[in-house]
Length: 337
Ligand SMILES: Cc1cc2nc3c(=O)[nH]c(=O)nc-3n(C[C@H](O)[C@H](O)[C@H](O)COP(=O)(O)O)c2cc1C
Image 1 (tube, rainbow, N blue to C red):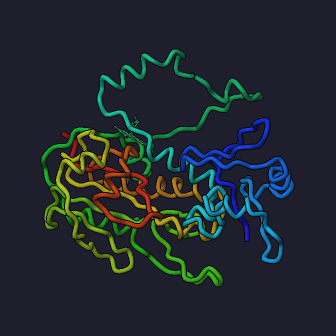
Image 2: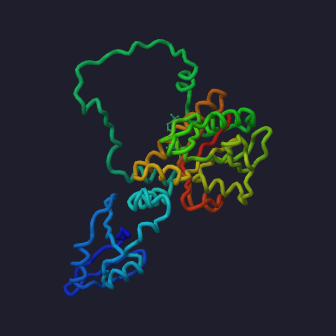
Image 3: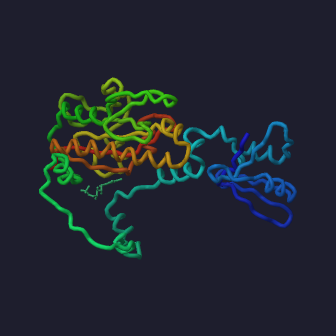
């Protein structure tokens, strides 16, 4: 059995003994120098560079190790919840640090923050870093592809009109990107869904919530898009507009016609990609999915306002999903005011 040394624990060397402290648990363990020596000999780096000890069933474990295990200074590797058992402790710490970052919503606070930055915004380019032999003029002609035209036109819009959006258009766009267009048999990896956007290993770890304010033919409410059956499932939740403002960083996004909120079901991807790269793929995947959707709506002259400033505490309060799920992005849509 592998036990990880909890990474917020640290050692304090004293004359007589060594203390292991952990600020989270307010716990101090005293170790003798002999015990420290034992630990020093047995600690090694795990796959994720975390300190760990491997305890075989038949080896005698000193009492102090048992105490440290009881006190969670050493954490049983299998007890780590999904997805952190695969992605590791450092990714977990990073994830929670990022999730709990407070987003600036007050313009005065934003300006103060800028003033506080003593250095100028960096203006850097690989042009200045890499050596090149010549510069080739691109043979441009007028953009002919309809997709190219939509891409050139796209712009973030933050003020929407009160014009309702067609439920028919909404369902077309959602189904085209998030609906399952086919399944492929992938042997050991099972039946994989294929959708309108590329996804790392076709794990398709994101599900979509649709928050309707002003859409013709669909009542206001929060819906889960059921990708297998191409339905909207209206969720039984209790929330008000102010909760949704809290959820989206109090930026005024709720005056839109509807919002899309992507949720990562991390075990889908962590099971296959058992390293921190799997974690970064989550954000790559959601970017691809949402850009599809944004451009598709743009083609119908429906504008988008994307944000990652999601308050995850509010998210969990309104939408009671399990610990291994987290919100990855929110996009508000509507006609430009
Ligand atoms: C990952 C990401 C997060 C963003 N978060 C916010 C946000 O919280 N609030 C906001 O007003 N805009 C947000 N934006 C929009 C950007 O500010 C915008 O894309 C950028 O200023 C460029 O403008 P454009 O989209 O019109 O090209 C975000 C964009 C991205 C890609």
